[in-house]
Image (cartoon, rainbow, N blue to C red; front, side, top):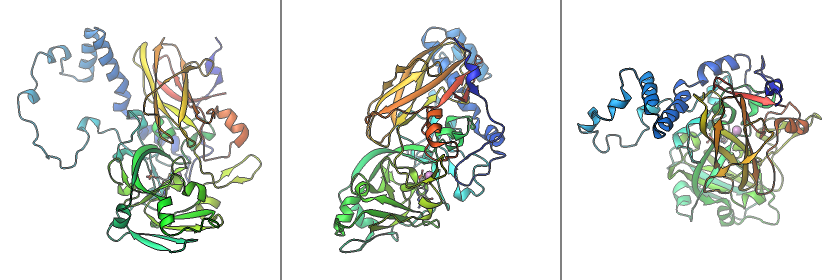
Length: 460
Ligand SMILES: Nc1nc2c(c(=O)[nH]1)N[C@H]1C(S)=C(S)[C@@H](COP(=O)(O)O)O[C@H]1N2
Ligand SMILES: [Mo]
């Protein structure tokens, strides 16, 4: 067996590239200070306690629990009724709108300090390491704002459709909600997700490498229905422009084939109205497209015959290619996956069984397969895809693993229904160079040290 550590590049001293107007220098230190969540590191410790109890190693688990909670005798606890077993609990509707347990208080959206100068033009990352299944709880959906968020009164909000239509119209939110709606589960990923790692491994945890990714059930009216309602000029219409009503007046061009396909004007997210941070009361849902096209606080859609070359598609959100040209109008998020446990910042407590789990997705359709490697990409085995496997939606995968206590490199590689295979980082760099910011869909590597510590690494 060759020494894997020779192939590993460690954290670089400074960061070459990062998304969206960031300031680099204090970044690594600041993220280490803020990003490592002590209680989430214990996640694997707690799972281990449960697993060892189940296999009869009760003494070990009792000692472990005692060490975690001084004064708590794990074994005797099952024989002694605690206070909550002998008293009344909180009344119904004590919290009219429910909240997570106080013991889950560390599971939060977090900012990467140093990433942006102004928090109104910032990112809050989803804690993927602490989530199960495929749906992101609405309160943990990532946030990306160019000019801050507003809580807009739906009674006064309007959506205008104009341009190459027979009858330009202005809709109230109530009028839109009377129309036939659909509900669909889709992921949304910022084009800058994983951007920090173009130049090498930088941020320590999956929250910061991949947390500009969330998945929800969205409810809304198909945009095609509205465009037909306004009498779209189908022979001349080539593109639409979607415009937000925030101070950024965020605008993006979308090709008409996409606009007439599966795009929604949405008001619902996970069964309730959109959260203000995510565009309340109206946002565009553009399944499979990069996040910036999902215009929030949507106020206007113009139908045109040419791309609009707005700020967010000419000076921003372009990919600098090795030949110096900028690639514009990136739309689709290519197939990608990541292991969320074990992942950077977590620690494995002992040899033995672990469930490797993670997420896979493709902007072009369904995920058809995910392979797992535990030896840095030399051997691959298929993971189990959990149902449902939906188009342009997160897919959860699981894989049984016995850790032998030796250094290991964990990787996942997704393949979508078009046959596209998620690339290695070096293959991506060969085509795209090292100056790109957006659209890094490379295979992620997590190195497990003999100590059980899990680290973000890149291997050649
Ligand atoms: N009006 C408006 N829409 C917007 C943005 C914005 O700043 N203003 N940010 C865009 C970007 S860059 C992304 S990645 C997604 C983020 O959506 P979220 O905050 O709901 O996660 O919204 C997009 N839509
Ligand atoms: Mo974004």
